[in-house]
Length: 269
Image 1 (tube, rainbow, N blue to C red):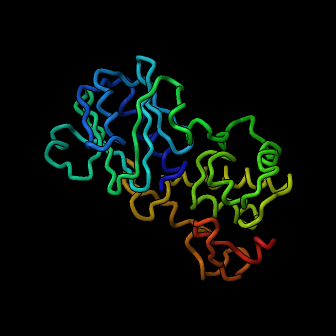
Image 2: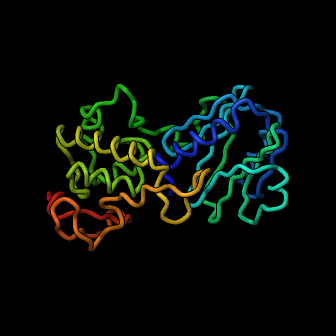
């Protein structure tokens, strides 16, 4: 599933393609998850933002287009004539803009979703409404993260994946950040010092992944093709290989139904 670095990469690339453009025509798959795309005809994009793993297209009439890419969602930009000739059965929504470009939402497994809401009204999107702070928020501190973990009974990796501790973290970057912070993913509480290390590590792995255009393992593509961060992963997906820090064999276990890789030496309890 695309996580914050992948969604942010797409936001940066797509923003210049759509700002100031009006939606002349819009269509979608018949699924209720994609039908809201059709409501955008006649609206003009004035901004493209991101919140966690969500893209938020702001229109000139105080409404917003909310896009979640799900597991296999991709956003592509094509000339309208080319789109008419080349689109396939995995095209779930599309928007034809005033500059002869078409933005296409392609999603093989149909886990993505689209909504059109009043500006800032996320009452019907609980995961967006209840999301925790953005990792790069200037005012966010390690002490804040520590307080948000206090009294929680779930394991620290599960807290990260909930989106309520820090927005935008998924399975790949949870493993990477916990490894960098030297925190065992199965612990249920962390110290203030560990909380600061965790925040610093999330920011580091996110920043590096954004610079590399995201992590492409299977389906993720940005507007320019594949990202390259997959070649720099230190922990995720490397179970059975040697730790790049201490040389121990990285281990794999399932934590709350999510496959988790960690180092028994660097991330000892």
